Length: 474
Ligand SMILES: Nc1ncnc2c1ncn2[C@@H]1O[C@H](COP(=O)(O)OP(=O)(O)OP(=O)(O)O)[C@@H](O)[C@H]1O
Ligand SMILES: [Mg+2]
Image (tube, helix red, strand yellow):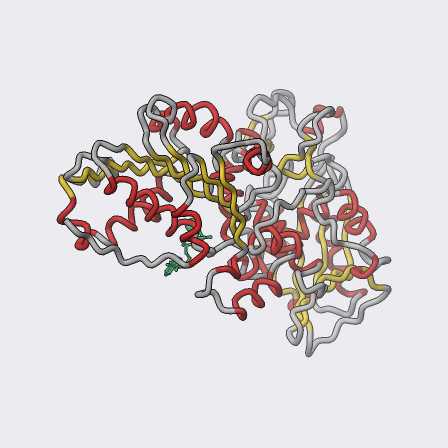
């Protein structure tokens, strides 16, 4: 039987197909042609001889179905003469030669039990857990000396980076390594790359398009420097839109940033801020209004206030949430659309400095000193004191996070994230959200004063005021 597959590999893909190495690891930029290469390598393996068993493992079951399995559906009429049966529920295809391919997601470890694999693809391997490769999939390749193709864009210097460094060593046999920037794919136009340079920070561009293993240095906003700080700002009615970003607290400070966005250039200036602990919402409202007057801005010119989607504050001591107060007493429009952390950080980074070294975020030195201090001090959590590894989550140290959170809420609500954030960043965030540390904030009732408060820690017993023994706001 002769099946003509609708795929002519590009030169750089042929090199991989032609290699006889048992293990192949490719680190590549977005849209470089990883998934297509991997799919056809796996298909050729299954059709090449009888009784072979191949697995396609994606980060999630959904990705396995929507990306890997979709390739099968797309070419079904062409491969039909070679198919014995196909299970749409198990995402499994069996060929007449008794070779099989399964499509799986490593978000469900139970689905990964099995052995006797003759071929494995891990698509976006760097976004899967190290144990999935080391403890589950690699051993499943042992009994039949199965082969593997690990393809991914980089995800910081995690296990995939270590594996890459290992595989590159001249004394290590059996592995091949290749590296493809996005521009290697002749179908990607130079203007697409140009757009990405404008819309991503240099660090994110290097990772997503040049496929470099960038280190997450300690600082979250490492490009922010004196060039982002200006001495003064004058509001101009015909040029600027005004927005506020707010992170509410009581024992912790409430932080509100005042942002002007130029309709001509998209440049953002943070010209004022509120950073105050132990203030009631009425006091905060009053302060906001005084700040607007001082900047010659009418209240009606504020487009909206962007806040935390999780609900606003650690405590709701007055019965009315801060968001309710802003809406009902302040008459403001308040927006708090879902904001996952990693895309928000990437968006802010793109404005601090993009890959073309253009800055579009400025902070007035005297206007928002707490924001400036927060940005400089905002760092990734070290995994442990002794480990050099840096986690993907910024530190919530209670000192540096409030003003930067307010800034991020403003950005995520005022700008279209999809334009500025590469899909892998979104994916990475999806995975980190599954970690227990980032589970949803929930309402708890204080064991002492009986008031409702919000916390990410379900085992917490007291609200922060009772915990600290301070008085509550009325
Ligand atoms: N040999 C080829 N012939 C024709 N088109 C190709 C070839 N290789 C890749 N492409 C096309 O290039 C685009 C990117 O390919 P693919 O999805 O495989 O890349 P990727 O690196 O997995 O991308 P992503 O970062 O989105 O996961 C797709 O439109 C794909 O069809
Ligand atoms: Mg892909």
